[in-house]
Amino acid sequence: MVTRSHTPVDAKVGPLAPYTGTMAKDKTVYSCSDCGGTTPKWLGKCPHCGAWNSLVETAAETPGAGKNRFAGRASLAPSSELKALSQIEASDFARTPTGQEELDRVLGGGIVEGAVVLIGGDPGIGKSTLLLQALDALQRQGHRTLYITGEESGAQVALRARRLGIEGSQVQVLAETHLEKMLATLQSVQPDVAVIDSIQTVYSDQLTSAPGSVAQVRECAAHLTRAAKDDGVSIVLVGHVTKEGALAGPRVLEHMVDTVLYFEGDTHSSFRLVRAIKNRFGAVNEIGVFAMTEKGLKGVSNPSAIFLSQHAEPVPGSCVLVTLEGSRPLLVEIQALVDSGGPSPRRLSVGLDRDRLAMLLAVLHRHAGVACMDQDVFVNAVGGVRISEPAADLAVMLAIASSLRGRPLPKGFIAFGEVGLAGEVRPAPRGQERLKEAAKLGFSVAVVPKANAPKKPIPGLTLHPVERVEQALEVFRSLA
Image (cartoon, rainbow, N blue to C red; front, side):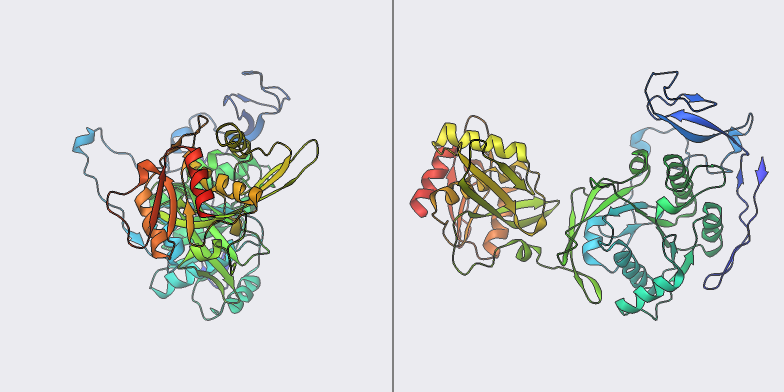
């Protein structure tokens, strides 16, 4: 075993206690990302499972060093004695509000002690801005906070704080990319919440690969996660994303952390969405809505307003959908444009599944007699929101029919419901909550699945329950 001792000094943090963690003096081997087998040298093909280009550099323990490799950090969760599930006392996790209501909503009410949060998004979307604002709010509440930046200098972070109007903040800042120095800082400062921006810039001396490689990201994230669980520090890791929008690095990184958040939105728009993909302490698919201002990101209290049209009068091809994002009903405008196409008509959707659009057009033709086989069909969810639930089917079909006929739906009209291949309209989950949200925002006419029709009428809302697509189109012809 080799004991490493570092005594880094930072002008803002002050002298740091030596890092006394013991780490095995390992040699480099190559492990297969598919089967986990190892080989002492790199090969194009794994000798164990036969997979090509699957070997990545990693550190191998020396004989007898395995049990002491992490010096008390042998597992992500503390060990306990064997008990029956009925004998284990369940208790709620204490949460600390971050000062950003929309972020707290996504986290499940606040950040949990010892939790590890991974947040990813496109460059320039506002990840660092949001986290710096949250750390400042936590610091003003009396919590110890630490911001470790590997992509910017301390002066650049201070410049951002000045733009945000928090230049007097007492948040501790450290510009560092060396993992062992980060661990020494966490042991010395003992913060309540720490931000690592970003995990792709962190490297460890135990590996010779470059920062951002699969092995470095996996090992560094594992050490930081163990530090969070052992010391009760809440750590937020900022992650890069690929050009497809997925988090860069090994997928095991997402399994390792407690919460995975995605920062979404168009950089040309002022609105941003934070979506929870994984959350061990709250609901998944919860979203928070922010608006980018001169003073940073501000939470949007009524997000439905940004997804609805601003037309003075109803226009053809527009239908309002009541969708669910986590526990929050949202009203989103679905726009459709049907235009004459050539021999190969196009089917394009933005914010909706393109394959499902093709299926809905076939159902419209087969069961409702609405033919679009020689027409280009374009469908868009306004505001940059992405809708994955099938409850959007009915609104999409009504928007397409409205654009094809050139007849607008009445003002104050909403619709939701899943459509099957047989032409039936199936119920959507939590239908009454959707209807109450629509009535609260002043909508007066709704086409919904018959199974979602409430037993008691909702004041100010006229319902048209339907069981099949043909009935929904008949309601459209009678109202348009």
